[in-house]
Length: 110
Image (cartoon, rainbow, N blue to C red):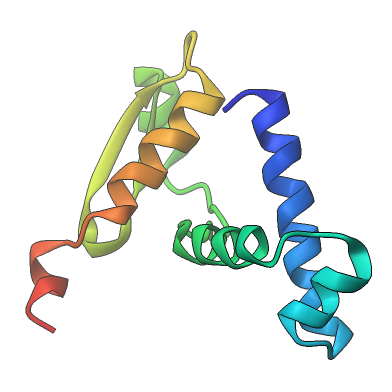
């Protein structure tokens, strides 16, 4: 995710939050601030669909440091192994978001 895309996403996240806390309807908020209501609705959906990140806890540092690999545990028990050397943070965020957007077989039945 480029810094421009991140800033755009952050701008819309802040606008969505401001609208929610304003007590105004989406059309009223958008009219007041000169925002296209369909854009706010679209970003609200997009941001709601994005995976939420949770607090990370370091567990078992011994094996992790020795192997030079970071293990990311996803919902449903899925795991993602990432090399520490030369890993791309933005790419990792995109990959996790993509993987978390797919239903896990155990969740599909519920």
